[in-house]
Length: 256
Image (cartoon, rainbow, N blue to C red):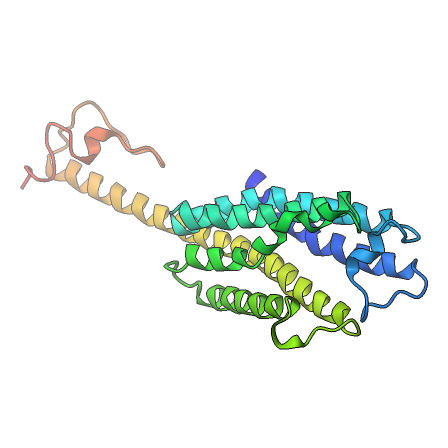
């Protein structure tokens, strides 16, 4: 339950961000989403900076907590810690950059979060590597790959590659970049949740089949051994006596 709640915290990220963006712009006369940075809504000279900064901080905190759930989910799916842990660390860094951005509005030099936000595009990459061998996760892998490539391309454009970004369209490019990152985090939560449900269902099915197989094998051994067992062993669902699985006085291998 705690894992699911932590993973579900990613849902708060887009809600908080778009609330800050929409409400902040609505209370800022003359603000343009096309020509201005989103962070200007929380700058010191903005009419109501708290309307932007507070939700951004909350969204960042949610991302940090969600990183724990992402690590746990990817670990359960993949069986390994390395890429799952790196995905969680990258997500936590991205969330921390949001927190710092809200705590230290423009033009504070700490507003940039010391570059921690650049870890954002690495989240889908590490998540992709974590589930690269997971069955029936092809769709999720393709989407994570698309998000990673899109994030890198748009980020490169934001840094001046191609000279496409100008003061007249910087707002559009920034929102495209943020939308890809946020969409990726939301779909990561959705994908992990669905994958965990499928994994859980298959695990339950496997355990039921295993239970049945063990029941049949034990009963067959009991009958072939003429009912001779160490102690009076009776089958109980979910309980496997060691004696019934090979350590009894009369085992399947010796009873012909």
